[in-house]
Image (cartoon, rainbow, N blue to C red; front, top):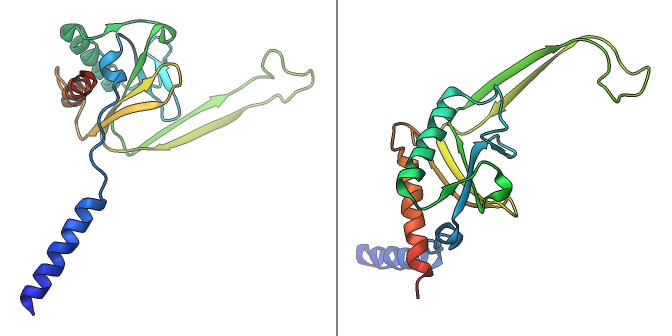
Amino acid sequence: MGSLWRVVLAGFAVLLGLLSPAEAAPPAQLALARYVALGYDRGDRFVSETEVGAEVFPEERAALQAIRDGIEQWGKYVVVVRPGEAELLIAVRKGRLVTFGGGIRTGGPSSGAAPGGPVGTGTSAGVQVSSPDDMIEVFDARSQSLIWRGMKPNGLVGAGPPLFDSFRAEVAKAGKSTKP
């Protein structure tokens, strides 16, 4: 009876291997693109490095600078300031489980509001729940669709962040798959 179970389990393992999807090849666009813009993932959108305010953590600024330095040393891409000039948008996000924010507002209606609009004071608060892993995301600049994502605990730490190394490896794979 023991050998029958081994045969059944081996057959099941082979069947699972056939049913599981093969690792997808990285998009060729990673290898073909030349111009990239850098920025931050704000959860619901890409924000260019030139358009951000206080909502970016110092660790994210340091990580983005490390990515910029790596790209410049690599020489594969040219970093542009305006996302509209880029083919790829590369965003970073430091891992965190929960972020809290808030503020106080005072005064009257904003400019352009209808006369007699609400006037007063109030508070605002927000909570953001996220992954504890650091992340690099690469978007197609035209469609804003995600084409690659890497996530890893402490993946954006250091001068040569491990997630940047993973990204470079994916670009190399994409380059091999685009050659005849």
